[in-house]
Structure formats: structure tokens, C-alpha cells
Image (cartoon, rainbow, N blue to C red; front, side, top):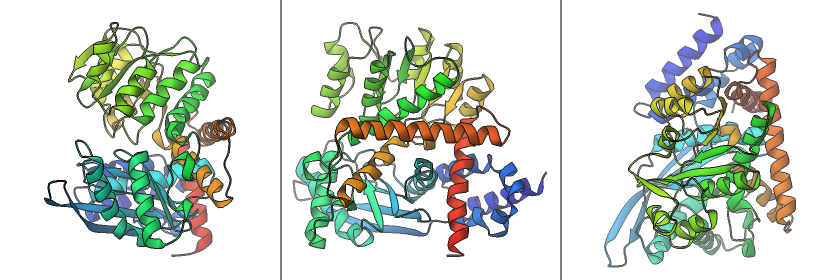
Length: 452
């Protein structure tokens, strides 16, 4: 074992012992560490300055109680989190997730990923993440408002446009952002528009922010496909999920000439050989907050796959591209085998860490081009940073200009990943390229700023 690999294993052992039971956090750290042996051999200054150890310890971890009242008067208690992970490149930046599965380890893994994702954008933003184990499903608007106000009553003291700027994530959309921002404004007694992103366009938000993660994933995948031959035109595509990321990924794939034939939610999947009707899916999910089975009731060409994930569609028809856009570890080695047998050429992550390590190994061994989430889904946070720029200058940009900025950023991320992978002897390995490139940018800033 090389000295660099030995140091990596020593630090990883420390990470697992100091953070017991946080398996997703361990997984995220392992995935980055596996890309670094050659880099650390070339640059021993990172080892000498204990950059690995420092990167694995968040700068600040905040946990707080969130009491709120149901419409019937029942008092409920949830737990709130904000992990301010690394500010070497700028203020902490990362979303809030409201979901019953949220634990400290969840938020730490997301924050760790966010550090490198934000670095890859080339914009001056550090990494952080937050959320709560609150479940907004089935709650009234009034209940969600009261919860968001209670959450922000504690969180506001840790936020600021030059300190920490949250945004949305799973369970936190435009409605929740509005309630959170309103409470911040009320307590802080100032209109600090840049303190949170994902706002409505009429009160400080950016055009295209809702679409940005999905669009950015497709832009990155298009570059990945073109580097290997041709883009989306004529391709058959599967997209998991049916939230913002999935819906707008589907929309952009169709604009680029591909056909998305499958989508999903937690109840099951739909298969539509004629191509997903984006307008219908958007109406069901964004306007009526319904279940995906309703799509089949109104679309004769579609079938509902009860309790099955969307990758099972590859058992029926050949599939060229898969875009996991739902949640972490949703695509495992069995799903990878199904996609490989179905002829998949490329997989790109629209969600955070949706592909298990064994699935990634299987895909890469089969010659499938794989775009990791820290690169492929960076369009969302990139456009959040563009929203911060507009807030700082009291300006608004057109959707065309914003989309061009997003497209340019995603092209640069693809180029960075490809060139870095080539430089370190792993041509075509976007995982290595993303991890090394993001690590170097953050590590160099940490070296420059001293031991803090």
C-alpha cells in the first residue's frame, strides 16, 4: 500500500469511528477519498496540512428544537439541523431538506458533497446543508407555515447573505421558501433578499431557478454524450422521480431530441412509450400535489408499475440514458445490471448520491459513461449563486440570459472534470475528475487561509 493510500485509510478509519452509524456520510467520504491517492502523492503539502482530516470535520453543526402547532391545536416537536461545512471559498451555501428520514448524518453527507459541488461551479460559495425530520406531505398550508416560521425563528441567527445562504431541497419548494424568508425578514427587520435563494421571481428570485437542476443535469449529460459520439437526439431516456429536478430534466431532454419514457414517485413508476407528457406530469405534481398513478388515469398510452422503480422499464425496451433524480442510493447494483442489459450508454445523477458504490462500479466496468452528482446536478446551486448576484446588484436577468449562464457553467464543469481525469491518468472517469478538481480548489484555499 502506498503512503498516500495508507494515510487515506487511516483518516477514513477516524471518520467512521468519530461519526458512528452515519453510513451515508461514510459513503460520501469514501467516494471522494478513493479518487485522491495519486493527487496526494503529487502534492504532499495537502497531507502535511491535514487537509483530509479538516475536510471531514464540519466547521459548525447546529441542532435545534422546532415546536409547532397542528390545526387542531396539537403541539408537535421536530428537530432542525444546519451544518455549516466549509467556508474556504465563500459563504456557506446549500439547501434545506424537510423529510422524515433526515438525521444529522444525512445533512453531513449532503454538506460534504455540497462543498465540492460548489467548488466545481467556479463561483465564490462554500458548502453547507440543513433541514428537518418534518414531513410536509399531508399537511395544510397553515401547518407548513407555522412549522417554517418556528424553524426560522431559531435558524435566522445563523444565516446571512455573507454568512450562510440556504435554498430548497426535497420537501422545500417555493411555498416553504416564502414562509421561511417572510419569518427571517420579520425577525431581522430588514429585506436581505440574498439570505435565501429559490424565492418567487416577483420578490427577489431568479428566473429559471426552479428548472436549473434538471436543465443543468441534462446539459452536463449532453456534453458527456457528445464527447462519446452524439447527444440526446433520438435517445430513449429514463428519469427517476417526478419533482422539480425530474420534471425539468424531462422537459430539456425532449427539447434536445430525446424521448423520456419513464418517471416515478414513492408509490411506483410510469412507463409511457409515447414519451412523458411534461405538461400533464407538471399539473399533477406541481399544481395538485397528486400521486403519479393519476398520470395513467389520464394518459391511455401509459402503464403504472405498482411498487416498482423506473429502472425496471429497461427490462421491456432498450434504454440509452438513465437520470436518477429522486433521492440517495435509489439505483443499486441490481438496477445497474438491468440498465446494462438494456443497453444504457450513460447515467448522470440529478439527485445527490443516488447511485450506490457497487452500482457505480458495475456501470463503469461495463463502459457506461457516469456523471456524478457533484458535477451533473451542480446547475441548481450555480443558479442559486446567480440569484445571489442579482440580489446583490438589485437587478433581474432574463430567462434567456440566465439559461445561457447556466449552460456555460455546466460546459465548464464538464471540461474541468474531463481534463482533470485526463491529467491524472483516468480519461473518461468523471467521478475522479470531479473529486480531484473540487478537492484541489477547496484544499488550496484552505492552505492559503492557514489553520482555522
